[in-house]
Image 1 (cartoon, rainbow, N blue to C red):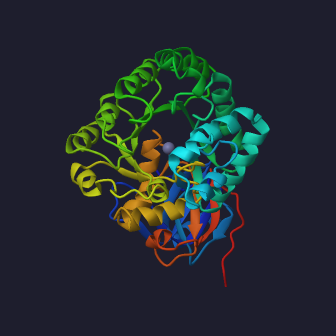
Image 2 (tube, rainbow, N blue to C red; image 1 turned 60 degrees about the vertical axis):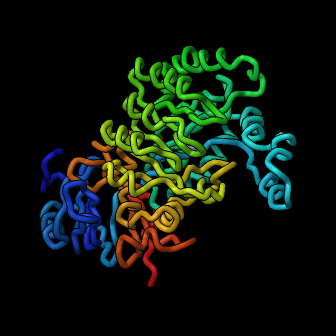
Length: 419
Ligand SMILES: [Zn+2]
């Protein structure tokens, strides 16, 4: 980590209570009445507000007074399907009017309807829809977002989705990490050519998209209704050969051993994990693979068995929390709601949940060295909150106590404090 510097600052935020979330710190890593100084978009200094003000005065650096607020690292939503066209509201209503999953599937519902809508959408439409969702997340303090492809299931649409994800950075003040979710579902037209489809995804599709600079990571939906561990392993192996890290949708509906597979390939994260064995937890702990918990999907599907949080804790697996924003199983554009659900439905402590949307979420994206905590040398991404204590980020339902966001050292939202 870079050393602290007391000169050359560009700007200072002073008077807030800091929750640094640094790994070496106790609990939230609280610095009461603290200050953060920024240089070239990175954190240059952290310490008491009084000292920051006098150092700033000596070098004529502007000081933002943010007394009474809490300042945390910018939140990171490390698992989303933000880019897609259409929605599944008609299906939602049909189901609540008594239609079965089979009837909905026969009527062209489910993932097939999102694939059809996404294939029909141009880049502009995809960007507009995703930007609206990204703005809501940004207003809640999110400064980094992971976005998956996977609703194209053909190369041109997968490429368009990833390009749309990259373009979000020009519309919304968030950093984007793109994930090629090549193995999400078998497209209708390849129903009789499963092996051929998998080979194309793991070969020419991955190579083409990676060469275009559109793939920060890959992902596969390893599940009974999707792809087998062998097929998933093939994609992870192909990615590894190209030096591309991986995520895995693992154990959402059954335990196929996908968590072990993720660990075996050194995946950054294995996500969902409602179904996970003791061996799976141990393997991922050893590999340092993050468990990304997605409570809004669990809630939407009204699943009965939550992920084995005690087992994961005991094994020492880092826990992250994300929205899984997608039109089918998690139409959620609130990371704060996901934090609340992680506590209420999964039993995470508020400290675990907040760490799961900052430090551990950064690790799940391979960005632990660069963001996710308030530490010298890290990107100056923060959120400012009108809360009594950090646990309040997990407490409200439909409340948004975020009053300002700073990205790479630049204030990008007006800091509004309620009277
Ligand atoms: Zn997902």
